[in-house]
Image (cartoon, rainbow, N blue to C red):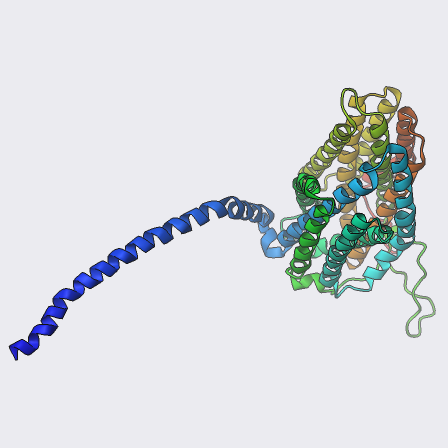
Length: 481
């Protein structure tokens, strides 16, 4: 019996040694695995830490709960993808050939893309008005369309095919369609403590920061190969397609909304026994402040399009003093981007205080700088004009947003955003067309730029100031005097 009990006892004594040995081996592998995990965490930290930091900023002050944070991230993706395509197109159409040939190619590009866009742009707003229940799908479709078109442009740029131009037109239309839908979506995602102008400034600033970060990445990808920025755009827009559906479902809700009509829109058919159709509120029926501010902003947007194309050719042929063409264009581009970012930040700080006065003031400042730059043409003043134009465009647009929020009835506010954004895009196209056909004379060009701003400021300043003095009461039908 005792002998029979010996093996178990012996086994019981030997078992701890086996366990100890196994534990030793396990601790060795555990230490190795822990080291691998530590290295992995260290390598991921710059990316995960940055992502967490961005998420904290975009979701701050209730933006995460309302869904505005996701829209900010989506707009950042949109800006990064657009700048990738811009880098690729600029390299293909503009920088790869001599100046004289480049001007002809850009003129052809404008004729094939911008001219049809001026016809399609007025249709974008009314078409999207008919999709109040599919805004997330519309934004996703705009992203996916640009992803596929980026691949087409990559193939056309490599093989010299003519499909480059219609594909570029498609990218432009899809980009503007996204912008219109995005403007209509913002009022649905306002956190309780946010004004509309603050929300738009957050979204715009997110797009600007992403554009600034993606531009050098796109330039680096171009050094690898001409098509690589387009492949990068494809990946970014595919991600944006999925991100569009992460927006809250209330984005697709049309509860309480109606369609805003411009004065040129045909009245709707009468319903029931009424002989006259009910008058729908529209941009001209909500007070003169909105239409005056829209005209002033159109002048700033027209100046922006003009400066982009005019200075691109002027600085390539006549670079800034002591610099080459690429550096000159880079200086002006950085100045414009910095001005735009500063205008967005100032707009968030000012919120909706006296938006009429803000519009009048910023347009007057831009006009003064444009006149000074035309009279005393110099490299410093050209950069200053680009910066002030970017500043005025950003701050003026945010003030227009505040006026729409204040004066346009909530039932048609999202539609009004779509219509106003379409008109501003058309103004940008007009400015670009003027910039491409104008002779490359600095004084003449900046004088034309000053005239563009003056045409938008002089007729509107008096009306905006009068609206500010009267407290901005909209002239709605039936409103008390």
